Length: 125
View 1 (spheres, rainbow, N blue to C red):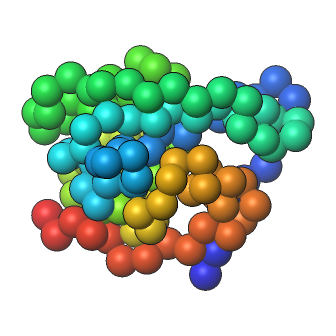
View 2: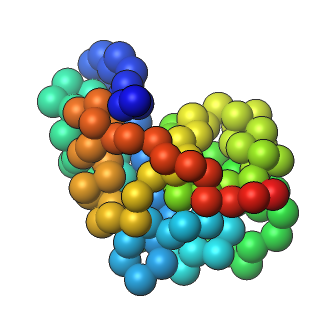
């Protein structure tokens, strides 16, 4: 089942955070080397900017607040524990888990086209 990208209108902003290891989506966001932050144009639904940032040292609960400060609206990950998912939700960040280990731009474009197939959560805690 594909995940819908939702409705966007002019003036909306979408920033998709994707945890990376070796330049590809990380199986578990808490063990990533960096995050790709991808800005989406609300009208064309196209990628308009991408930056890669090194996160602070990982401690439980630190990444949701850190990404919220960077105005992330979505996080797409291979795996994530339930507590982290809840913390992202409390920060108004939509969580998608079970994504494949692809390049961040490919994942973002698949999501925007409604073609991202959520797989099994790669995290078991």
